[in-house]
Length: 234
Length: 268
Image (cartoon, rainbow over all chains, first blue to last red; front, side):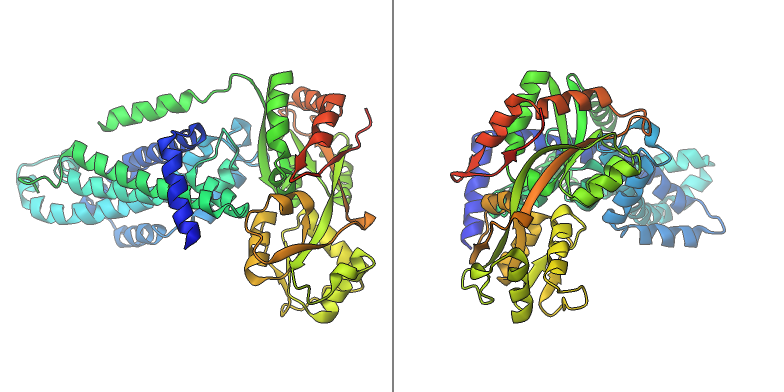
């Protein structure tokens, strides 16, 4: 119990004193995960929508696969990305291993199926509602997808935030491809793993509390910016 | 909003480009846990204008990183593996820098009575005879390799190390020490990691001093003939610095809780 109390106190101290290392790794955490969420959303949202609108032979199979990939083990993704980006791997010439870019690539792979699946679920219901209208207006497929994406934006926001939640707390993949290098690829989760390894439980816990706080702040910020959950709107 | 976020993300990504010279050095967890890196790296930066990025891994992985050209040099402590690394053409040469020592940690009550052992092998023999719980790194690191060679010297083969008391955790030094602390078992650790460790619990340093426990660190630059992209000029500058009198003063002068951790022994 004592350790938890100390962790809380230390978290408070780190925040109040605006510890420069803490700010740096927190910003790096945000940068990596937000970049990954933006890229994964750019791929996953239209993909989910397209799967809801389009009928083709292997659709059921593709959707089932996508749902299964939501549970993609980060440590395996990390290992595969590592082997691809390693100097002796196929993309070694780019020298991307152990850079924030490598961490973003790994997280995009982890987040895209999750975001696409949730987007597909949401859009499917909306499509059932809009189907007759959009067909009778003789819209093109592109127009249908654009309409559904726009009118379903709040549900899609949830998909993106779910992706953010998975990405910001993820440690397995970014530890492998980032290497937890001080001042270069150390983020909150890998710092927590490092401090736990040193037996500095209070500091590790303090970083953990800050990570949770950061996730809450980002979610609140996105909601207030997009004006969801306010009194006279749905 | 989405577009703006994307732009900001891309810009900040572009802004990470390096200004100072940078090189990547794979080091062992035991070296990093000692805290010596925090003393040496700022001085290297000041003297050479060189930013050394540390990848903290076990010796096994450090050697793999060097072999595939993902780092510019490695600093490890497992002589046999280092010589294989050179023989396979992955490194140009091996330069001894410094040494520290391994210590045997265990429950303060010392149920196997290793504190009075005559040698490290004798101490491990007593642990095996008493079937006292022992945590092994189990990760192919330098510490793990040393531990296995000590078991062999004690005449306790792999088959005799029963899982009932011999637990391989497959983790770094810190994580293994956490496990040993939680289960209150014996463990082989380097002195630096032990002194810096914050969760000692009921554990105590029980045996040290056998010369076979000395732990030689060596610096091996990755072979540019095999991996043309490695920054061998930077690796050479770092090597000159590591073998200089300046490094000697810093390494020999580094103390933790009043104890000297490393002894500099590089040939100038």
